[in-house]
Amino acid sequence: MSEPLLTQLSERLARPVGESDRQRARLHLLDWLACVAGARQSAVAGRGGLLSMPLAGAALLGNVLEMDDVHRTALLHPGPVVWPAALNGAPEKLADVLDAAIRGYEAMIAIGSALDAHHYSLWHPTTTAGVFGAAAAAGSHWDFSRDTMVSALANAGSVAGGLWHMRHDDVMTKQWHVYHAVSTGCDAAMAAFNGITGPAALLEGPQGLFEAATKEPGPLADNGDSWLIHQVSFKPFAACRHAHPVIDAAMELRKAGKLDAPFHVETYADALAFCDRPDPVTELDAKFSLQHALAVVADGRDAKPEDFTEEAIAALADLRAQVTVAEDTAITARYPAHFGARVNGLELVDTRGDPERPVGEAEIVAKMHSLAEWGGLDAGEADRAAEIALHGDSAEAVNTLLQDWLT
Image (cartoon, rainbow, N blue to C red; front, side):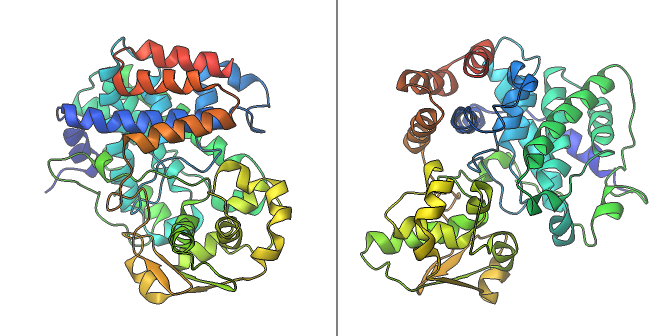
C-alpha cells in the first residue's frame, strides 16, 4: 500500500535545492517585490493597522495589481502567499529564504494541480492550496522531519479554502484570502514544531479535502528531478491572467499595424466565465474584462495599472463597445496547459511570460521600475530591490526594504 500523499510530498520537499533553482527563485522574489511596491498606494494599503506589520502588509498587497506570478495548470498565484511565509522569522541568509520559497512553491503547486475544474468553479485555489505552500515554506526554516512536515501540511489543509463569491462585489476578500493562507500556514508550521500532529491522509481520506471540495481530483504535480517553480509564469500585464492572451494577441496585431475595429475575441471557457465584462464600472471590473483589455491595447496603451483606473474605463467606452467575445472549443481543450486566444484571426497558443515564451531578468527589473514608480517610490528604491533580490545574501535586507516601503 502506498504512503499517504502528504507523506510522499514531504519526502519530496526534503530534497536539496540547487543554485540554479535559487537563481530562478530570485527572479520570483523580485517580481513579488515589484507587485508589493506597485500596490503601496492602493485602497488596501490605506486601511490601517495590518500594514504596520510589514510582512502582513506585504501579504495583503502582493495580489492587488493582478500582476503576481501564476502556475497555469494549478490555476493559482504562488508568489503572494509563499514569499511572506518564507520571510516570516527568516534566518540571516537569503539563500535559506530562497530554499524555503522553492519548497513552498512546490507544495502549493503540487496540491493545487490536483484540484479539479469543479473546485475552480467555486473555490479560490490560491487560498485552498496556499495554506500548504505557506506551511511548507515556514517549516523549511525549522528543517522539519518528514512526519513534522506532514503534520504542518495536514493541519493547514484541514482549514483550507476560500469561496469565489467575492468576484461578484468590489471587495478586498481576494487579498484577505492571501493573508489568511499565509497566516494559517505559518501558524500550522509553528503548531507542528510544538508537537501538534495532523492526519497524513488529509488530502485523499474519506472526509478529506478531495472528497469535500472536488469531483475528479488528479495526481499531485511533479516536475521530476526539477522543482515546480521552473514551471511558473510571470505576468507582464496588470489584469487577470485570463485576459493576458487577449492582450498579448492584440499587441502582436498592433505591432503589425493590423489591430482594426471591429474586434472579435475567441478564447477558452474559463476566460469568459471570469472576464466577459463588457461594461466595467470599477478598477477591479476592468482588470477582469476581456473587452476592456482589448480596448486598452487598441488605444495604444501597454496594459499597465493606470490603464484600468476609472478614468481609463470612461475613456475607452467606445472601443469596448466594438469588442465581441466567444468561446473556441479547441482553445478550451488546450486549457489550462495553454492559455490561448484568437483576436481578429490571429491566434496565440501561449502567452508572454509563460515558460514557452519566457521573460528574463531585464524584463522583471523593468517591471520593478515601472511598478515602483506607480507605487510612489523613486528609481533608487527599484534599484535597491533589484540588487537585494538578484544579488544579495541578507534576508534581513528584504525585511528592512519592506518595512521602509510599508511603514
